[in-house]
Amino acid sequence: MTASQFVQFTLVVTGAPYTSQAPQTALHFARAAIAAGHTIDRVFLYGDGVQLATNLACAPSDEPNWHRSWSEFLSAANIPAVACIASALRRGVINDEERARYERDANNLASPFQLLGLGEWVESVASTSKVIYFHAGG
Amino acid sequence: MSVLIIIDQAPYGNWSGREALDMALSLAAFDQPVSLLFVGAGINWLRKQQNPAPIQQKGVNRNLAGATVFGIEELLADQDALQRYGLGAEDLLDGVAITHYDQDLLANYLHVVCQ
Image (cartoon, rainbow over all chains, first blue to last red; front, side, top):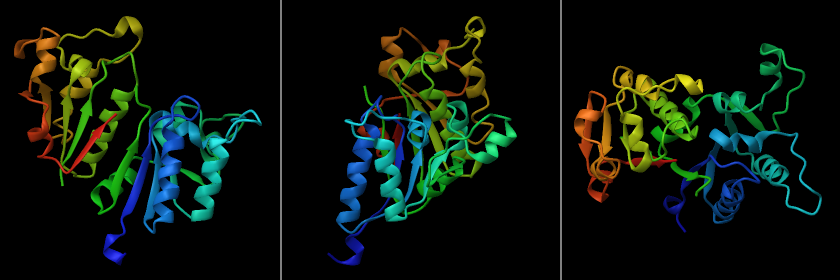
């Protein structure tokens, strides 16, 4: 393959883990894309997709842990990962800064996710990246 | 570079449409051209005289009335959806254009988002 055949992707996940297949399908796509030499410039969680960024979910030990699989993949591949801050705050996914701002007892944003605005998604849409959406379906 | 955001869920029963609208408003805030298309049950977003106060929600028609002020280029209603729900142009908010949700329409946009 020549360099021009490689694509830069942004992945947008809007379906929640254990409710929809979206995070799982997106992870399989991401692994395949990286393995084929493509790049992923950003993973953006939106709507119910932000549930993937909590570090308080406890999957039964005999089931796949999509939270941990995603976090490990993102860290290993060094891919910037963003949970939409407006979606996340509504659904109880907060970092330490928001915990202090809203005077909550705990924070639960998993590493390496950051809480940022829709501007991050707009930047991908306005760039040359190919933006792929993983919705809940149904 | 023009984006089309498609809303296919009825208002109030589901949060995805509101979050799709936020996506459109966000693009507009960054001066990116964006239009909204309402299809299927999503056509009900465009009805005049909605009254969601009894279920403690804000009227989506009020959000949409401000959409073009905030830079959203077009509010589009799918003709088939209007027929399915027995709606005519007179039932819709001001500023809505009626169109056909088909390949020719989608070909006008580089980026299509359907929640």
